[in-house]
Length: 92
Image (tube, rainbow, N blue to C red; front, side, top):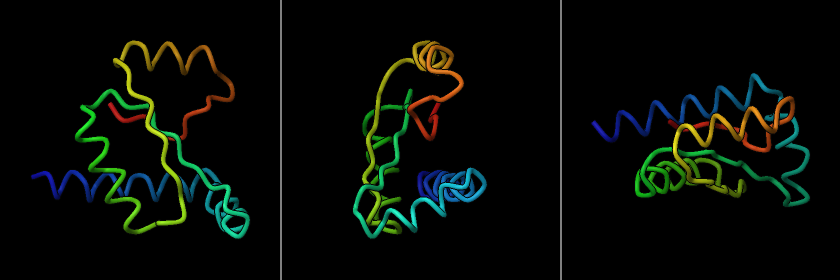
């Protein structure tokens, strides 16, 4: 079950990067080494770490920052940062 969840989440992340246009930015900035993915996470720290490790196996050049908080705090943070939130992915 965990493998299925991790696989689906990685596919969701990859799709999000492509549709957000971040794939092009990632390709151009990969040569400069300043690629970063920010995840707002309401999941447990162990789950978030497992997902980021699995993602880094596929995309080792991308640095992942996980910001952990409760789901209500994450929603409030995104609303406060709108229209340009700092996070790239929300994991609830």
